[in-house]
Image 1: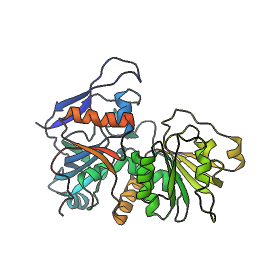
Image 2: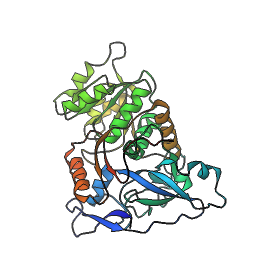
Image 3: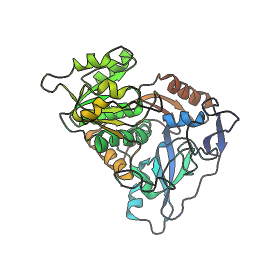
Image 4: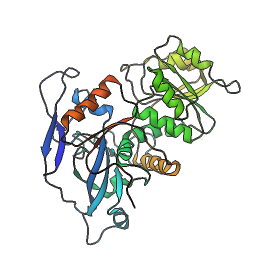
Length: 366
């Protein structure tokens, strides 16, 4: 019988509990009209999965499979007697699962945030999760996987890709020649923002708590970077900016904390801070200096189906390969999967943490 992976509910307070992983056996599902049956090859962790295990995330399901990122192959069509041309084109082809439900194309945010928007994976809002060997989804909830990606790379892309794309492009408006600061390099979203920004012709600087991660980012096209553990790092960064353009156009940030105070002097008048998370804490300071400088703080998270498709098209066009930090094999490898969560808790990863569900990890032969 195929496997699925869920979290098991145990007693404990939010932030103190740590739900164990639970392996389940499930039947192969049957697709209905307008649906696809997908054999999953790989799935990937996000910080929301760690928050779920700590009961620090809303709407947790203990029966729906974990994980929002998935790569697999369409093996059957639900309406096989009269399938749509789009579904026919996907049969026996690798696909990426869209990680969101209930957000089609509205630029401001989900069309119905209150009752229909959800992220898949251990969510009461959707029965779909990628921590399983087989899954059924609507044909509109997948896109063809870029042919140059391996299953692990494909699984590494969806949630961080659309989050980074929205922060950099939809909210940040980054264009060729812009100076962009990406904080917390090493995390999945930050690395995707770096790759997207470099491909768009931006000049990118980064911050990290580890010099080694800054060096790796420079190897990926960043102009330079600083350690946020170093006092006055913003002054050191100011000295790195080019004389002809000695300011930042955009800061893409996932930490919060002191980001406004640290970057306000570096940003141009009307510059943008696009914040997609607050790992330092749930509050940020706003300074009068930022108001006087017309700095814009834009909150952003996830993205729409439209933005997801734009992002995948950009990845395909520029042959971008998401960074994979480590892969473990098998949904039944609970010890190995727990070690991925340990990497995430300790901040050891540089890139995405991936579970290879089935087969090898070479690009498909189309």
